[in-house]
Image 1 (cartoon, rainbow, N blue to C red):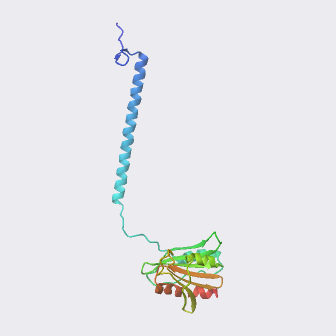
Image 2 (image 1 turned 60 degrees about the vertical axis):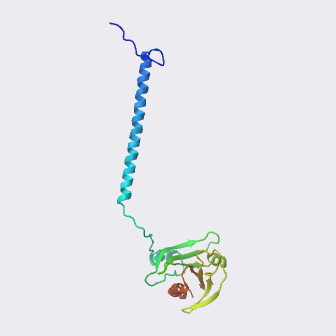
Image 3 (image 1 turned 135 degrees about the vertical axis):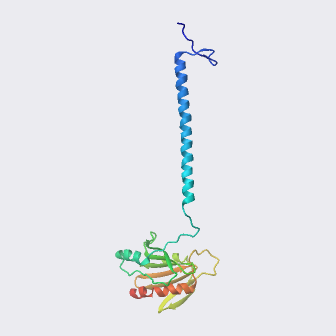
Length: 213
């Protein structure tokens, strides 16, 4: 029986040897597997994108900003364990809501303060700080180093006023502020609300101020 010649390879100009045939087939097999892997990868990617698209379409969305409504009294009850002074927990009228409440410590001077942030019925911000054994630097930095503009008495409590509403300087949230001291506590109210709303918050923390005297 005549021996069958290998196929003539143009690049070689002669029939390939059995070893060359085996190498060529092995390479063809590798190329095929690589193409198959790429196709599988592309297919998996397309399927994943399709799933993401479906989730985006079916999950309900709202254009209304999400606002936290923090239970200040509950947070204060937990924080009170490590604080000797009574923490101020104002009872405010309907329409007021809190978006934050926590004990804060500033590393620069070591002053610890009880903080509660509020949004007023007019959607303005008022922050309440109760600093313990606070120094003048702590107070000044909260109020953007602005200068006192007057004094006001609210329910028997005298407050120093910082009215920065007409300034062109960058004072952040310290557009308006009230400061008073009682015992070891320094109370600072600051924010963007109008004086009447500050008055409401100041009246609400009078019991806590009286407890410090």
